[in-house]
View 1: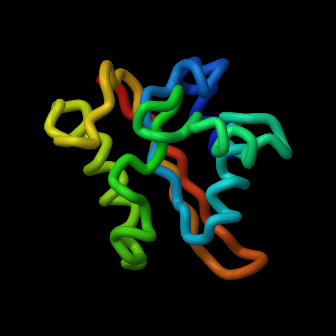
View 2: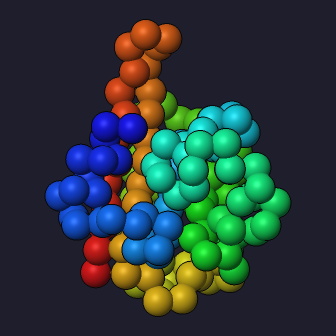
Length: 129
């Protein structure tokens, strides 16, 4: 994914799984979330299912993803989904995420996409303390 590569290059990330503390991704469908894990370089192509089964992306996992429940828990307000993702990372940085708080959050990634088949827009934002 070009957006991720560009964002990683700008921030100096060479190993996103190890360097990112928390991620919020556009999980509009279950398969989309798995593909995003691979596209963002969290796991190699074809390894997302095994990573999920191993708990890699849970609150206690190596890289917590969608700690607030993602789109499936908030609905899918067009245009506002990305703002909600940024807000979750902000709350994590503040240490005010309650029972979903991740320890030692230093870098957060928000991934959002939208469009129609053949014409998509994707954003990858990396936030740090």
